[in-house]
Structures are given as structure tokens and as C-alpha cells.
Length: 434
Image (tube, helix red, strand yellow):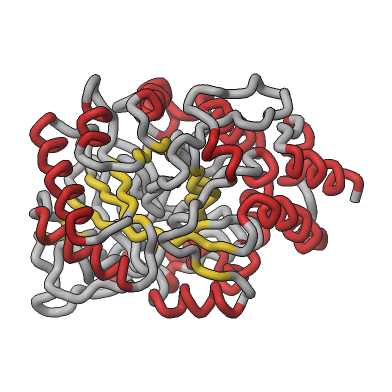
């Protein structure tokens, strides 16, 4: 296919595809999906070989968010039956992080719900970062705390943070349809603050919210312009009790095409498969490793992922290997470049450019989430809380009748049976999944 040959050639040169080419990837048929994966896989292997970076989420503060993001189980007015708890203490967060690191994770992602941190919150998270780094030599730490005020990114960097995540989530043109309590420009500003403070910037998107192909291309091109070191791709899990509960729009093939498009537009950036991986890619998850070079190990913010051992087995069986702590994630030319050296849209990226000063960092995309975007959470009530498991306050789960009604009205292909609300790990008395 001429299109794919052209995109591979551009990807190997780190040249930006045209918008028409990116749209054409999304428009390919299911019959062509293996060809699309094979082509994008050549680009992925050129810059990242067969390495897969593992990241581990620690949800520092769950639920009770004042923002109204339509996709989020922790949003204002959410009826989802997720765990709700206030800030974990530094030693609690460090113990949670240790489980993921023991399972092979290279990066710990510290996430907290809310519009943005207060200065006291930044101090609290700084103490947590120091506790984790004191006990785990060489660990990368990413913070995801929402919108940042002046000086806060610098304080996190001084505390030892390597990266900061804040997702754009969707296109600027449709952002107001998804969230009204803050703006797209607010999100861009926070990513820029992270860059300016010397943090590795991580920013991504959520697919499956009813957006058009044009919206997907818009947000990916906007991300390329911001030049983050890593781009997490979240697939919406329509969470009962949120406004997008009935938006079951994705198929495994559609998810693969989206990941391929992101790889072609961002060829030398860490692309992470984040929230919704198990629910939407299902048995085609191993194919996605040919497109993305990073995943989350175990559970997400408010939903459960597949077993950590299953993640590791999948990587090995697919012919990939876990990236170890001594390896630099990003390609050498990005490691040599400095933040702010963004090539103009449409120009080939020259050697030594790009925001890769923080090659050891990568991203803390927060699978399924990112700051204030906790779309990873599962369908409300799909897993009952074990007796004594939750340390936190939880809302009552939806009734069986409500779940049945929701399943009947969901679009064909909805797999609510694959979703489970997280009832273990951080904020509970049960061991984490790692």
C-alpha cells in the first residue's frame, strides 16, 4: 500500500505526515489492519527496538473531584462506586510503589484527583517522592496532580520528580463538550509549565468519547507541537454513573489504527497504551505492542487491570522484552536535545531536536487517566468490595437491575463484563496487583 510505504519512510526520518495521511490511517479497513500494524511496527522498532517500558500507578487521593470531566469516574456528581479516600501518607505510597517496582516497573506514577494541588499538596507529594527515591535507587517518578500554579513544577523537580503528566484528552474544538470547569488552554499551560521547569512532559489523549477522526488527528498534532517525551493513549471505559456511560464506540481494530496513527505522527516518542487496554483491545493486546513501547503494569486508578504476571507473559510471548532500569527509554537524539526545540509543523525534525533532555524520565501517563482524567475506572459495581477490603469510604454499587438495563442499551460489542472497579492496592487493606 503506497500510503503505508510513505508513512514508514517518513517515520524513519522523523518527518511529520500530512493530516490527510493521518486521517487515511484511521480510515483503513479491518482487512488492512495487520498491514497497518506491520508498517507502524517498523517505525516503533527503529526507535525503540523490542523494549517495553513498564509503569506503575499509585492513586494518592481517590474520588471527590470538583471538576466535571464527563469521562471521569471521580468527577463532580459521579455516581460510580469507586474507592474514595484522602491523601495516602508517604510511607503508604512508598509501600504501594514498591509492589510495582518488584513486579518489573521502571517508573512510578503518583496521581491525585482534583483541579490542581495546593502548595501544601505539593509539599505532601514532595515528601512522598523523596520517600520512594530514598528506598528505591534509580526509580523514575512522575507526578500527575492536575493544573499547576506558578512555581509548583519547579518545587516538584527539586523534590526529585522526573516527569509531569497532564493530558490534553481531546481536540481543542470539542473540549468544551467534555469539560466546562476548566479549559483546553489551561491544560496546555500546565504541560508548558512542566517543560519550563525541566520536567519530562507527558501528555496524551482519550479515544472513544464520540469524537470524529478529525478530532483525533487534531489532538495528536497538537501533542506533537507541544513535544512531550511521552504520549499515553487512553481508551475510554464508559463508566456507569458518568455522562459517557453509553459511549461504547471502540473495537480492537479501531484501537490498533489509532495507536498506529499516533506512532506515525510521533515516531520517536514513548507511546503508552494506558486506560482501557484490556477492555477494548482484548485478545489483540499483543499486536498493540508492535505500535506502543510502554504500558502500565497491573491495576489502574479506579479499575482493575489484568494480572501483572499476565502482562509480563504477554510481553515475553509476543517476542518483546521488559526495559530495565539501566536502559534509557528515549532515542539518543532526543536524549541529546533540549526542551523547547520544537520543529515547525510539517517540517522534518532535525537531529538533536525535540524535548528529550529528560531521557531517563519518559512519562507518567496514569493509565486511564492522567491529571483529572480518570477514565480508566471500570463499570460501577461490576466487582463487589470484599469484606474489610476498603479502608476508604465507598459509594453503594449500582443495583443488578440498573446494570442489566445499562448493558441492554449499550451499543453492540460493549463488554462491561471485562471491567472491574479497583478494590485492592492503594487505599485498601488488600495486596496490590503488580
